[in-house]
Image 1 (cartoon, one colour):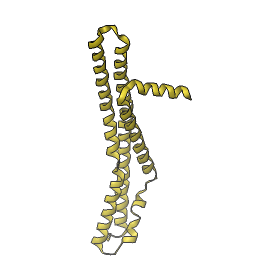
Image 2 (cartoon, helix red, strand yellow):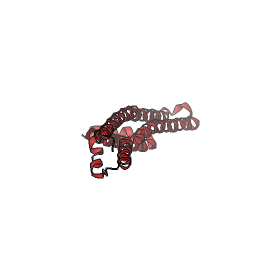
Image 3 (cartoon, helix red, strand yellow):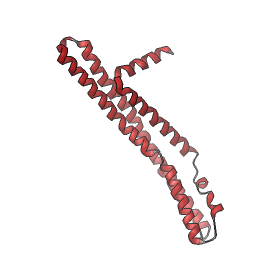
Image 4 (tube, helix red, strand yellow):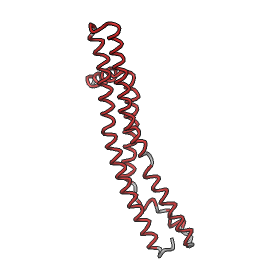
Length: 176
C-alpha cells in the first residue's frame, strides 16, 4: 500500500503548486458527476408529478398551471449541476496549461542562471510542465465525456417527464 501512495505523492510533487487545484477540480468533478448519476438512476417522472393529484382543484386553468409548474421544477432538478461538471472539465486543461507555463518559466530561469550545464534543474521544470499537462488532460477528457453522457441522460428523462405530463393532462380529459 505504501508503494502506490509514495508514487502518487511523488507525482503530485513533480507537478508543482498547480497540482493541488487540479486535484480539487478532479474531486469536485467526480463528486458532482456521481451525484448526478445516482440522482438520474433513481429519478422517476411519475414521482416528480405525484404532487399533482393533491393540488388538483378541478379548475382547468389552475390545474394546468400547476402541472406546468411541476414540469418546470422537474426540468430544473434534472439540469441542476450539469453545467458544473462541464465547467470543471473545461477548467482542468487550463490548469494543466498553467502548470506547463510555470514549468517552462522555471526551465528558462535555470537556463538564464546556469546555462545548459544544469540538466537536473532543467529537467525539474520540464517534468513539472509535462506532469501538469498530462494531469489536466486526464481530468478533462473523461470529465467532458461524463458531461456529455449526463446531459444526454437528463434530456431523455426530460422527454419522459413531458410524456408523463401529457398523459396526465390527457387522462384528466383536458382539465388539468
